[in-house]
Length: 147
Image (cartoon, rainbow, N blue to C red; front, top):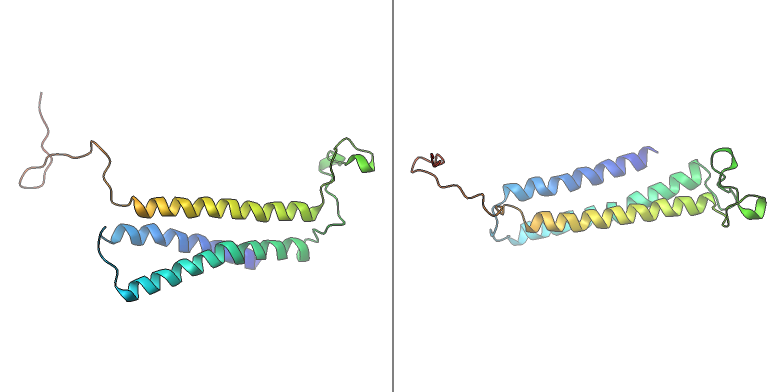
């Protein structure tokens, strides 16, 4: 449980550092060779945590500590989801392994959505919205038309 929580927190912290760095770096500034190498290793480690470590830790927790195995069937609260094979109304049998694998695939869906969102944030950083240009005086104060 601790390994899963630490891996999720580390992934979130590494992800949060990207917009922070992107807002500090001027757009169009060329990368040096060293900055490009550090950035590529950083993104590789972030993807390694997001797509490798976090789902693995979830599956390890579910199967080993919580015993979510293929021989255990999910019945729900008060046998609400009892399958037809065992006298219930549900036409399919849902095992705990199916549930844990579905949650692991949900991790992948969330991380790929975050991955695409981070691309968008990085590519559109420091862009002004249309219509937000304000005319300023020589002293830097905005000029407001009275009228």
